[in-house]
Image (tube, rainbow, N blue to C red; front, side, top):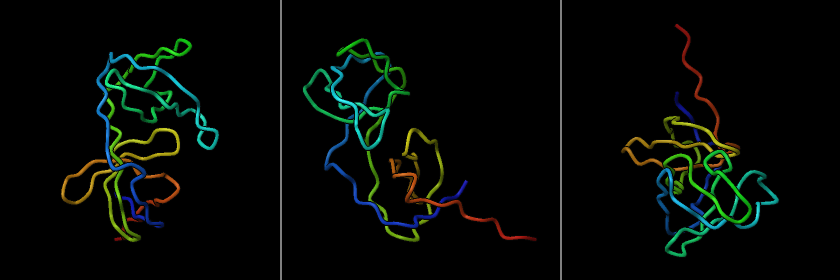
Length: 116
């Protein structure tokens, strides 16, 4: 499915973290603006937001339940992206040159197919 960027987005961080299923993390606070996202720390001390859909929480300890790469895309209005999946306010997309990353779902709209 094709998506078009209706509002530009600049990646929030200049780094990304790759989590593997089974990785252990320290679970911190929940994002008050985006419920279901938790500020977590990996074994190397790197902090990142992780959606509860990919996290098995037990107090301040957690286990990653799906492979998850935190890369965000910086996109411009009217860029066209390919839909991969959606998780709590964010959509994983692929650019025309094959880069994958997350964009806020609210910044995207479906591209309507031409009739015919």
